[in-house]
Amino acid sequence: MFHTLAVPVIAAPMAGGASTPELVAAVSDAGGFGFLAAGYATVEQLAEKITQTSQLTSKPFGVNLFVPGTRSTADISSYVDRVKACAAKIGAVPGDPRWDDDNYAAKLELVLALRVPVVSFTFGLPDVDDVQRLKATGATIVVTVTTPSEARQAQQIGADVLCVQGADAGGHRGTFTDDGISPGGGELYGTLAALALVRSTVDLPVIATGGLTSGADVAAVLAAGAVAAQLGTAFLGCPEAGTAAAQREALAEGARRTALTRAFSGRPARGLVNRFLIEHSPHAPAAYPNVHHLTRPVRATGELEVMSLWAGTTYPLATAEPAADIVRRLHNEVTEVVNTLAERFKRG
Image 1 (cartoon, rainbow, N blue to C red):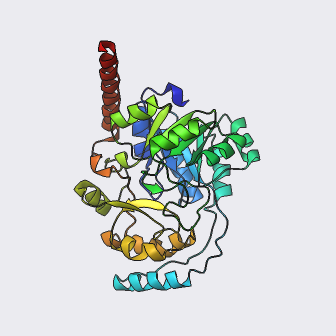
Image 2 (tube, rainbow, N blue to C red):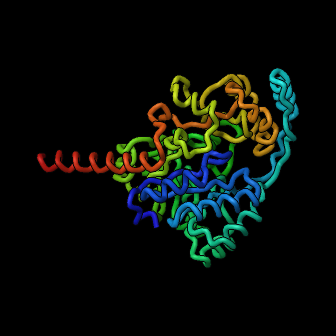
Image 3 (cartoon, helix red, strand yellow):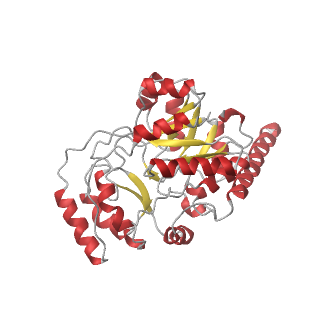
């Protein structure tokens, strides 16, 4: 499917509201491919998003599911106290630091019933039986990986395509397990390095993602063997995206650095540095989604210094154009890069 895109650009699934039906439809209609994010949505909300997207575009689109991990046994009581103290200062009440599976089984049944053409998985591997059930409906299976080892595991369970995530990516790292020690939860590779290592490990089509913003970035990963480039942060400023107003302003200013942190969710994710990230990152336990539920009401206040401002390292290069304009611009930039290189080597 991704080999035949008119524009080899994919709008990444961004959980929490950024990936709206309008954004997905606009990217798909412009010749790219869009993903809806099932993460954190209820089953009913996801069904409505799929229905709305289908009404907005006749083009295919995908849905991304979070694979549930094991329950954390970490004692997070001291972190709960820290978040309570922070919340009290802004008049917020923290949430219940519970574990759940994000209604994974019900969401899987939904995408099966609605015959979603592309289903992607993040944070782990779907069961082999579920992969076969999805394939029986004609679905293409995409698995997010960050290392060659994860790529091998994904190939073994029957993945059709791998989404190779580099360390520059905004939002959550797609690692299968979190070591609880290193900032990224495990080995960190830049996008091109991860792409090269995975391609040398498995024989599957690969999508590249992480810090890709311009047509030159897209051209680079295509030249390195990717079938398409997946961009998330590049679309956060679009009018169609569900990005919070405070985050839009911070992204547009472009003045903050980014960092990996467990402070907001208990799982490594990259975002703009603010007060909450600085103060709580050294103490945050590897306990996802318990920490996510704990901090969610605090983040929902809309106060910039306590929000999870997910963004990739190259976010200052992103623009606030309509999604279709971004897709068209990327296509033109890729074409220009390819023609320039062809002319250069022709002269040589």
